[in-house]
Length: 528
Image 1: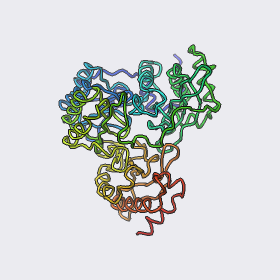
Image 2 (image 1 turned 90 degrees about the vertical axis):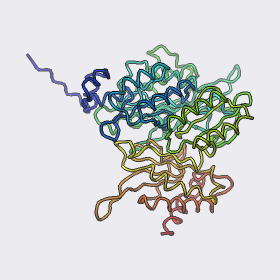
Image 3 (image 1 turned 180 degrees about the horizontal axis):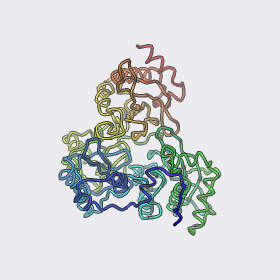
Image 4 (image 1 turned 120 degrees about the vertical axis):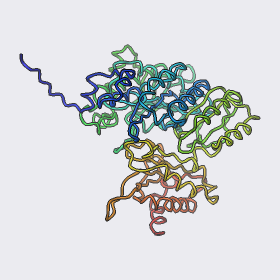
């Protein structure tokens, strides 16, 4: 018999995926270990190996970052039972467990399913958690509430079996106003709500960017449509996933993200493929626009999330909660669920800065809720500013990290907490990532750290590449590479320079955009 020869170029990961994506965790538990192939496919079920040998991480998917108080209480209970009582909020509004044993994985999954919580598609080459601005339903600057669209996109892509095997991970995010609090420029698909004038009154839709992303080579998303009617945004998102599925690199995983597809094919060719796919699937694409569209919504500030007392629906308020390092004990999370029931709308919101929010609080109860949050050992003020440092988990848990991000967090907190920096507390953010994957997006932070190793005569030491002036619209400029021990002094000198040269109420990113990085280089290097 003639042997069949197949010369398709594919990576080892693609070969494993081609064998099948179905796992039976009960059978794996009986066997007592996972094979190499099962470890790879377990990501589709939200299960990752931990840095600690023999333990696992599980990532819950929380579309739009909204969970009910009932679900939150269950999450706390399962963390206590299976994950040493700890949980972590992520930069994509998910929640993670660490230190899971293999035998507890199916038990945890069944417990979570009783309240509609899942780890499905928490990792793997699929659509990851669809994120949205944490204030989507209540922000005074919103064009409309984008949360329902985020959840429907998540449901549709998760149920599309033909999208279970993408070349790499696929990320969608939705923002309710031009401020872009959900970071549309660095996602595979970034959707921003638009309100425009129409022949019969205001028309609502989305501006769409595709091809953004971090990692070792970063790209800003490119505008593919200036206006997509709201009712067609789910079909559009699916069409972009199909574009990625069919044109992504399945041989070189380092270049297999959608950002490389857009860069290789060009935005015009990608647009045509998207339109063709939508038409094949029965959508009328005549009202998708590419020309200039004037947004007539209320003006929005550059950083609305730093506002301390934004009103919600019917004059209600919110309480924001800084979760240091994104880490919570189960009893803290359960107590926050109780607070949401006693004073709020029975919902907890997770944010892309690893924090939590409670909405629907009567103005007279805000002080009381903040007091309860403080008694839990958490901070109810200072979110989205200098004191809200954002570290990924680093070498504490992640096998890919090269730096202990939480150690740097501990080193810089005393510096930025200095009372002399009070005037700039709301005008700079600090992000720390432990490797080039940029789970904490250091390129779009006012001060961004990326973990690395710095060579010395005898071996190497932990260090960081430091960038300044990043924001949604532009990546930060490289200041230099510094040993861990030097980083606190670098932060102090950068902030001193910022205090001295800023104008009006500029952010650090605004100051870098106006003057460049030279004044900061002088302040840092002349001080050595």
